[in-house]
Length: 252
Image 1: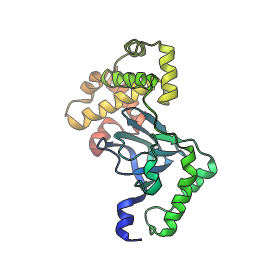
Image 2 (image 1 turned 30 degrees about the horizontal axis):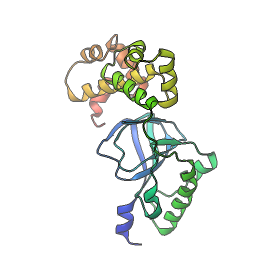
Image 3 (image 1 turned 180 degrees about the vertical axis):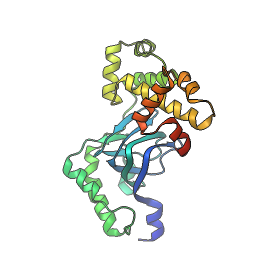
């Protein structure tokens, strides 16, 4: 098996970030990815789906998916990433972005697949495909967008563009009750509407911090925080960095 074939078709890596990172993959994932979260947490957002990833979770990102990801950690973020192209029979697979609900034994097998620093040999690929064959039965097939998901997408878009909105406003915009909105978010997004709104505020705040020279006080008011100190406290709790540290870091 040639080195060029391995380079073009597989990408097995152990990745480490500091505290917070945002990645923009709206052009589409270049490969399918099976990944294992070692440290930290993450939120991956596509047009039709959002997943929340915790330490110890195994998750799947399908090839060509347009998405953005947000990575959080108190000290650092670390995860294993196994990228692979569709090969042979796997070309017919059509799976959704998802956290894989597999057992502990299978998670441990994912954790043991060799990554960066080891030769991507036939033996390594054998281990990978052996584990992949066990994971496939756990994967959910991509489904047509239901009215439920359309409602969640509408709510998420409204919150992202109106970060100072109330839950009742979001529910009214989606023509549903507040209790049902909470149920949908917990079931489909993995958090409450208020928690999602807080994250949306922080994302918008980070964008302003990195792309403007506006003061923290001005940005805090712009995105709907009661004060600059409130914004600092929430941002620190969400990503482990203050506004000053975000600007100093600069690379998200």
